Length: 77
Image 1 (cartoon, helix red, strand yellow):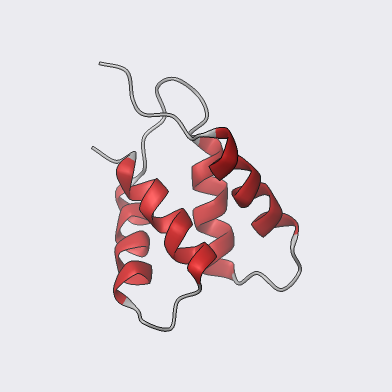
Image 2 (cartoon, rainbow, N blue to C red):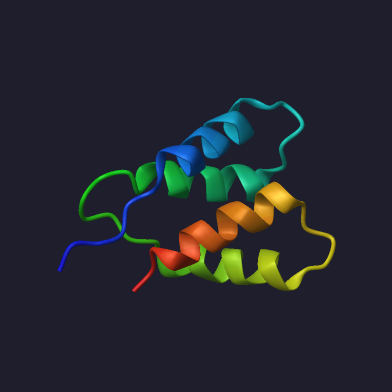
């Protein structure tokens, strides 16, 4: 079964997050994971899935971090 792929709009958001000097380490990790999943068989690792869960449960997480976290989780097994 083919894995889900990152949409072009999400890939653009991820690229912008990586390029922004104000983006935090966690958000950059999520952005890198989302961009890595543009291929056919890429899936979110357990480490990134755990990080994404933490981001989504934290009310202080930014909207971009939550968006990237949701995308990463949607591509996990």
